[in-house]
Length: 342
Image 1 (cartoon, rainbow, N blue to C red):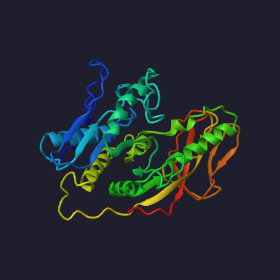
Image 2: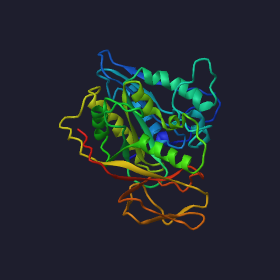
Image 3: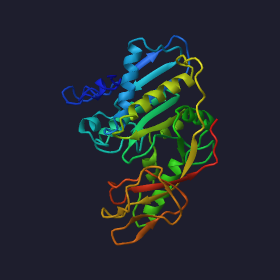
Image 4: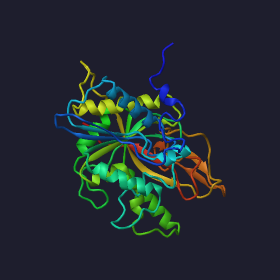
């Protein structure tokens, strides 16, 4: 009987030697530098502690590089298997807060407010030294793997960007059936909904929607988030592993296999709306999975007071979360985009 290459990595504590807390807190960073100059790629896993597939994918590749199965031909590759050791030890999404929000270094001379800010203060300089980012995640609901990309080239105030073509090419190479755009725009819409409901928001509230990729873009690079599948999907680590190899081949950092088929054109969707959970008793009318189709007017959920929540447009449900806290994002809508990835 064949053994999965991820079997050993699935043993308790195998993903993170700090899992038992005996060694204290530290961030493990593995660097591989070829003698030939080239792209500088950073791969992150475990930004959220309960998302283990990225860590497993990275650990597998690290072992294969150490064992000589792959050779780095040019450039620099940096691997961070567990970006949030505290959340991993706890087995929860967050240690003290969401590491993938308000992702920016602390102001000079100001002590870090929490654990995740201390980690951010380590990761930001690391990102600064790279130009390409692949951040590996998974999600709570059922659904297929997909990639998330940033905005098109623009000079706007929200997220100015000039490397959309390279980012789109990276996303296409990952081989997922769908690619989703529009994150920060929709986060801003969610803030507007909260303000309209009477919530007082700080002036810099939009920064809480900025994560690792937004930070990379702000530093002149580009990056893609790969959602490898549902947290417990046994195929998710393989999705992440293949994605890292795909990016390395795209950047000509490792040799591509002979006659490698071209990456298929994925369906591109744009986030078109967000619905907040108002009360812990708000409930879905069925078990929605990410990318389940809906038609305008379809019944999606029922509020605690009996109000019906119906689909605002034809499209798809994304990130339905029946564990969302009151005031947090309950689910998103996405609809077809005209964007074409090279």
